[in-house]
Length: 218
Image (cartoon, rainbow, N blue to C red; front, side):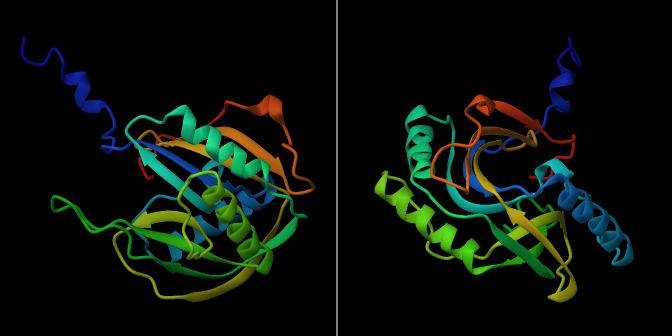
């Protein structure tokens, strides 16, 4: 019977708390393509040992709601209540620098996975983080005070110091609540809200799946 269940070895390794909930901004398609092209060139020119994230997964995280062994409805409800309380106008997000973060410490002898990121700028971006955090706390959720806006491009073992790039900009028209299935590289869009008003932009889009490529980068 040995080898009968060998197919289980092909399944992705998932963390102990595989269900992640977060708020984020997704760039428009044109910007995503531009960032993807920039990433390909940058990785090649700098011999970065890591694969680029798929353009569908490029985003700026606003708030990490939590990681869960099993995502419960009450956390989704509280996060939706927080999202619905936000009213802001669209604003511009600018990336002028690229660098790497330290990432999590290596485990079991594996190389460190350092995120390669674009650093984001914009007063309105910081303001959205602030008021969304206040709305989260009002609805019983934890919210971080500190905020380093960034867009992750890839993961790799080597550090990279801050370097200026030709600015990349996009206009944020909405923000979203995302269920990330860690280890499966899959994002489920639970809700999204227009930055034109406090009401939800597209209620019919609840549950729409945003599936990324097979890369295991998370």
